[in-house]
Image 1: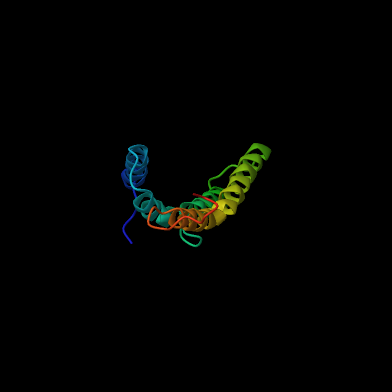
Image 2: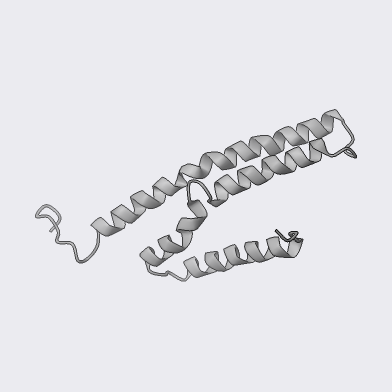
Length: 118
């Protein structure tokens, strides 16, 4: 795998920014869900990936031989690890998309209303 650069990461965040702008333009909800779904995949989505990235950063800093050991370092690494777990806990957002998709399908104009709704 080729080495990553800050420009690679900036390109990824720029794509997220474009997605946000697109979603602000009132797209069709099913299309919007399809675009957001990969971001919230329970195994490979952003919450899981960001959590893993923060844990890997903490490990890289702590394990590097040139890192000075100090109480401040350990506090900062602990904050990274706590943030990683908080991000990973958001992996359940994919269920929100499932529920939203079901709700939108059930409220489709093609679906006949029950007598109570008329």
